[in-house]
Image 1 (cartoon, helix red, strand yellow):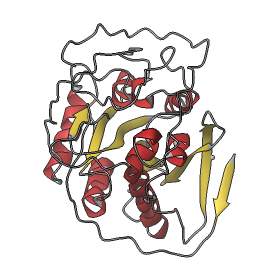
Image 2: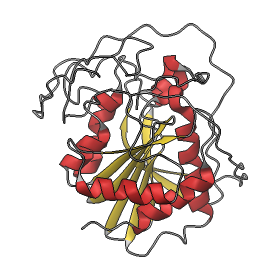
Image 3: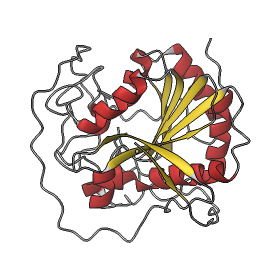
Length: 311
């Protein structure tokens, strides 16, 4: 998602492989507060998929020293295979971790805005660590996929606004081929740096990799994590009925607001909208701020995702 500060300080912020390491304890998380994103004049959107023919021109990279914040590293107790579903523009792997072998598939996607929302990567790593040590909460009929980072290039670049976009200066959560716009009215939206929705729908290699993964699986429900503080956004325009039910179920076990805060921003080309177009109940969830992961709360949300049934 895309965020404006609401009266608080803006905080700047795989082939198959196997790794074995020693356990690390998960931190105790306490929610704090808040920074945001999300147009006063809705532009005309399009649902037409246009195959990309070029790559967006890279935007200038910050020369500032990244903030002294870092995601919790992914250190696992037991062997855990990963699937590389593609690579970033700079060649970093997009790794998906799989838990369970059931016929009903669920997915979590984090770090779509890279280093600007690095705490979503930390949360994904914490959930992977937790399930690696004890996957008993995964029902026999469920398979869960976790993609910790869709934007590893932005995460490596900087843990502030300069880490939000991919290598080509594109906001990946505006690059999916449903309701896509190259540009949009910026009132109420994140507007700290120049960005675009790409040279066309799904112009970015990271977007294409996730779309390919979704098209070859039967995912029924999906959570995309962001920060911070706007609430829970169901996919679809208008909101999809199943996605609204998922959002309502999540709101019942968390302090995340639903309906979400309306800043007047029009969201185009988002992952949840694309997921809904594929028959998936999908939501964007905003963590409380740009630092904490609300880990205990999100264990409850994970249970909701695993138990959720479509109508």
